[in-house]
Image (tube, rainbow, N blue to C red; front, side, top):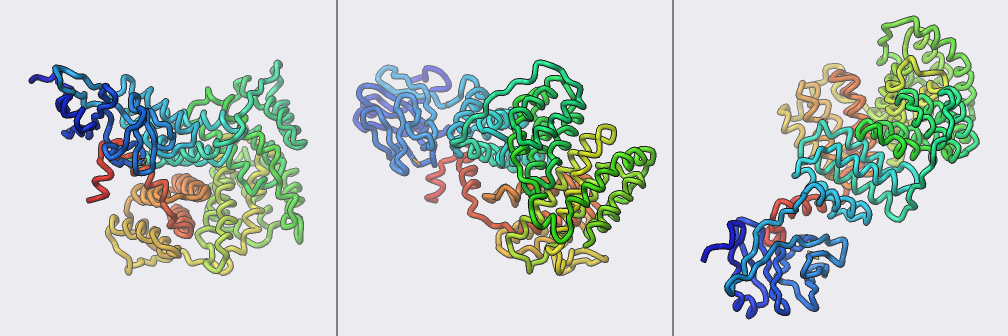
Length: 590
Ligand code: FES
C-alpha cells in the first residue's frame, strides 16, 4: 500500500497495535513510539526527553505515560510533561488508514526559532538546566545569531532579579569570548551563561521599574548627583538620576565616566566586584544593543550604593593610611591631567607595571603621578595596573593558602575592569574622580604583595626552552587539558602555556583550549572572570612576553581550581545528543 504522503511510514496494523498496546517504528528517523490507548492512537519520540530512556518500557495509565527511569510523567496526547525537569516529549502526527496506523517521521515545529525561544524562556523561568541546554542548542541549530540568545538571557536576568548579579557577569564574560570559541565551546558558553542567570534569578524578587526625572539637567549635575546619592546610599535617587542620564541620550563614554566617578566614592568597593559588575553591564550593552540601557544599566546601582568600601577596613588605614595617600593624590590630579593632555607618545606600560609591584605605597602613588606627567592617559595607567595584577597571579607562591588565590584574582579582575572602563571613557571624558579607580587598584595590588613571597618562577624566562615538554602544538594543548584533569598541576600548566607560546604556536588555539578547560568544569564565578579578563589583557598586549605572562597567570589560576564534578557538562552533553537524535540509553548499554 502507498503511504498517504512521503513523510508518513507504516507503523503496523491497528489490530496488531491493539493486541500489543505499543509499537516502535525504527528507520532513518528517531525511533517513534506508537501507543494504542482507549480507542485512540498516539505517536511520540521513543526517547525520554530527560535522559533518553526508551519510553516503550514505560507505562500508560489514565492518559498519562510514565518513564520508568526517573519516573517523569507525560500527557500522552500532547507530550507535555507534568515534571518540568524532564522537558516535554516531542510528538508526531498519526493517521489510521484502512486499518493501518501511519506516523509522520518528522518532529518539526512550525516556527522552530519561536519554539526554542519559548523553551529557553521556560528553562530560564524555572531554572531547568536540561531545557536551557536544548533550547540553546535548538536556536544555534536554527542559526539564530548568538547575540540574540545572549540578549534574551540578559534581559531575562535584568528583569527577574533585583540587581545585577554573578549570573549576568558570567553570561557577559562568556559572550565576550564567543568570537574566539569553536562551535562546540560556543554552545557550552551560552549554556553556562544562561544556566547561571537562571540560577541567579531562581526565587528572587523581580526588578521594579523606576522612571527618569521629568527634567533634563546638565550632564555635570547628573554626575554630581550620582556621586551624592552613592555617598548617602540612596538607591532610588541614584537610579532615577542614572535613568535621566540615559533618557538624555548621554553617550556610553559619558555614562561610564559618571558611574566610575560615583563607584569610586568608595575605595575598592566589595573587593572590586562592584566596579567589575558596572564594567560588565556596559559590555553587556555593547553585545545586546544600547537601546536596552534603561533595562540593564540601572541594575548595577543597588550594589554600588550598598557596597562596603575598603576605607572601612584596618588594612587600608594602618600602619599606613592608604586612603589618605590616595586622597592627597586625587587633589593633584586635575592639574596633572591637564598637563598630561599636552604630551603624547607614552608607552612605558610594562616598566610602570613592574614598579607598581613595589612595597612602598607612597612611591607607587608618586610613580603614577610621574607617569601622568610624562603623558600617560588614564587608560594607560589602567593597562599597566592590569598587567601588574596579572603578574601577582603569575607569581603566586604555592606556599600560600588556597583561598589566597581569590585575593590575587580580585585585584586582577578589578584592574582589568578599570582598564576597560577608562578605555571606554577616553581621555577627553575622564576626570580626576574616575582616575581614583587606578589609585585604589594600585593600593589593593600593594596590599596583596605577600602573595608573591616567595614568588613563583615564571617559566620560559631568559630563553628557557622547556625542552622536557612536547613541541607539537596539539600535543601541548592535549597535555594542558590533561594537567587540568588532575589536582595540583599549577606549575605544569604554566610551563605548558609558556612552551606553547615560546615556540610560536598560535595563541588563539591555546586560548580556545583554556576556554575548553573552564567550560567543561562546574567552574566557580571567579574562573570565568579570570579567563575573560586574561583574554582581554592578552588581546591588549598581543603575543609578547607580557601577553605570555598574562596567559600563564590564567592557566595557573585555572589549574588551582580544576578539576570539578562536571555535572553541567553532562547535562549539556545529554541535551546535545538528544537534539541530534541519538539513542542515549542504547549507547550507554553498548
Ligand atoms: S525520567 Fe525518563 S530518562 Fe529520566
